[in-house]
Image (cartoon, rainbow, N blue to C red; front, side, top):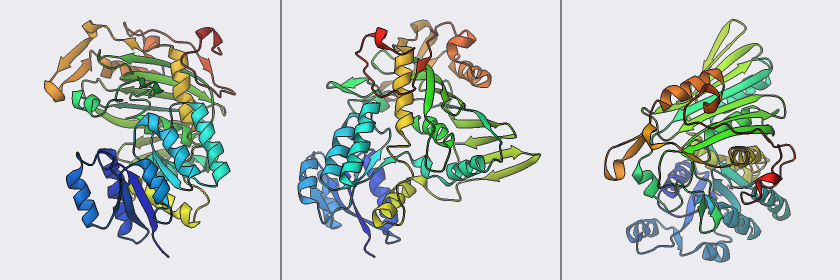
Length: 412
């Protein structure tokens, strides 16, 4: 069987991670990197020379890839900006290519729904690069949930604190922004850097191995501690799924100390804890079960799964436009609930470091987030002095996110 041929749009930043993972599959004969798109050839001259010497086809634009890539490329991967995901994925599928789209999928639920329609119309597929949905630890944990070991699931909660410096926000023009060139971005820890861990909880709440739970409602608070961004950098969220599971999420890019993402799951018969290193501890019925990722790189599995779907070995990808729709709805609902991203007053913010390494620390945010996580409350609920309460937003039947609509149109 011929290896599945991939093309990557771009060669820098996360595009290089796509290239690395596809090359891992070259070792097993499952895939090959056939082409890349290099729009800025002057900036990437040395990389282009190396890739050409390895026999890759270099396209100078996405349009050229679509026009000349048929017969050479089976799957196009999109490690591109958040606002570019929708138009590029739509064009690729309409041109007859399957797609691996980097997370987060798209900024709005209507874009997600439109891409799902395009999938059906074209017969192509669009996989989403939430790699932890491909991780052995998450997939086995979902099997444990579905087999009833934990009983009825009542709640899930996750927290993660990752400091980000000036270099992080300067790496591209859309980092930390809500809108770029008239297009929604909604960049922040909840929608980008730590997005996996909200999506994990939604997936684990789904009623079978392919689905994520839909959301009935969401309440969220969005804050920023940096004056040079328009997006949030410190956020918390509570949601209720349509099957009655309470979900809580706590993230910040302005901690005193980094804390890797950590998730707790509560069931009527037991509990489970998932750690960022993919170590899982399940306690139920007086017994303890532990497992991990079995040494499998979930990033490689994103590409392997797409290749297997293309070959017909799987019916559909693990992470799809369908089972990530509730993630998009959660983000849209968070904005509708919070109404605005509130600045954290200067007296609670301390800058440290210099130049590109400069970062921000919000006073007591680690302890405040820890307390909110332990109590399953939002920051305003526990009396954080600068926090402002928000309202519950109804997500039942939700199909359009319009941040410019009058607030009177919101569904309470």
